[in-house]
Image (tube, rainbow over all chains, first blue to last red; front, side):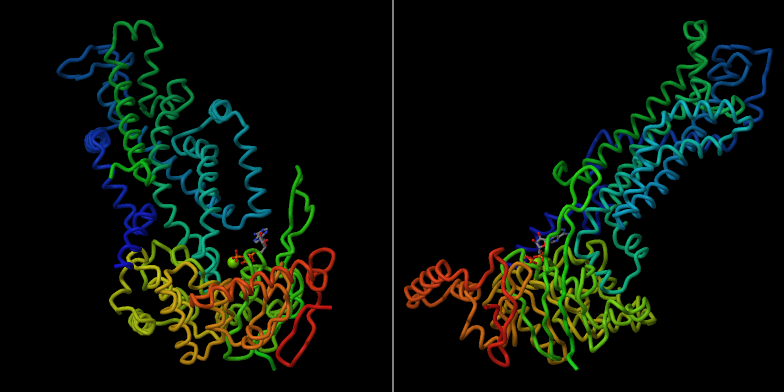
Length: 302
Length: 308
Ligand SMILES: Nc1ncnc2c1ncn2[C@@H]1O[C@H](COP(=O)(O)OP(=O)(O)OP(=O)(O)O)[C@@H](O)[C@H]1O
Ligand SMILES: [Mg+2]
């Protein structure tokens, strides 16, 4: 009886890091109506976007067609055309795919860098930690957007990959800090000491012992970051410093609205893209918030 | 040759402060202690909270770096070994941790927890590995099927047994047990302690048993060392220290052991008052001006005290 009591108390205590924490994250998110709806909506959008993008030819879509400049929505062009006579719906789909893929890649890349560096800094501490933290401080004081803009302006041939790399080079710092802080706390726990006395090498302790205990935090952070990264990409493209026009992106479509005539009279050019950005970012954010709540035992819906 | 010999061990933690985080002083967590462990015995380390027991244990096993002093295991200085030798000798010393909750990784199954040292040192096939883990888990009194469960599915006492099974995996010679039962229910404590005694003979273990509970120490230990502020104040055979304590600090600790017998309660209170009076009167005899203990002085073959 006593053992049972202990057990259940303990389960209540460390449920956030119990083995099924990913399952708990999932369960909590399902309980959150808003997050569930967001998940369904987002899945549909992604399914449609990635599915139909397979059948679209990017080169054909970005080809200028002078005969149908600014055509309003019609049977041929469901969402009309832009100033080059290019089909908006096609651009929207390809653009959404590009924007999402880029956001995802940046998130994964920064997640990976931040994880590796954060783990090393937090696990070893001392001088290594100090040096890494100073480097991060330095990167954080740099004017990130300005440097990206300068980079885009001076590098003659930049494409999706250089864009992802330059973005990632700046955006890993927040994650590294977060992971470091969590690792610092985790390494004080006895299971890490136990692993050391059992002769487990440091890299294995970091990857096999500590990392699994950070999984829910990482998932939450990456999800919330994904929305932000899609936003940054769209924002930069909007300003004209993102992807070249030959690579459709949601931001490029929205940026057509800088022309007052388009903004007032040709809603089909920019409105769908704006709405799509809004919906995608909101959905991801709602999912992320639900995950965040789920990862924090005190805020669970039960 | 002694099994384990500790010579003038010192562990100082730097105190840093100021903008450049300069070292402004030291916490002398362990300040020049020497003792030895004989093969097969249980040596108890007792003292109030913060006196440096954990630091001593963790330094012996290599989790903390010693500031000065030697640790000789079967004549070999552990600090002077190269990498390969050290990892080899690592197997000889294992630890049972105080907190059975944080000492098992919540994300790993019992099988993976106990197999961790096997995977580091021996190349066994999955079947052999599983058989070995099951043997160990049965040996510590758990069901062989529990190897597929996760730590949170066990009670505190059961978890501590899993920790013990893990420590036994590499056939260590010395086990450092840092308050192995203080996180457990009183009813479970005796069970785990007796179990530790059983495996001691079976696996021919030497224990360094750390505790602040003199009752448990008396039950478990052949010899004990009483620590006070990083130093030893009294050391020797358990019997002698309990029956004939010499240092005032030891007397205080012993008089503070709760007595279960209600008839002796009055006696105990009187003893306590007596010791307190002696403590106030004869403080100078036992501690120097800085409040530190004097060097140990041998008063019999098996008993040393820190008095002038
Ligand atoms: N990492 C550290 N940095 C600085 N000081 C420390 C550190 N760890 C321990 N100390 C100090 O060293 C002293 C001894 O600590 P230790 O943990 O060895 O005590 P203990 O005898 O195990 O106490 P307890 O019975 O409470 O476990 C304490 O004064 C403590 O404040
Ligand atoms: Mg301690």
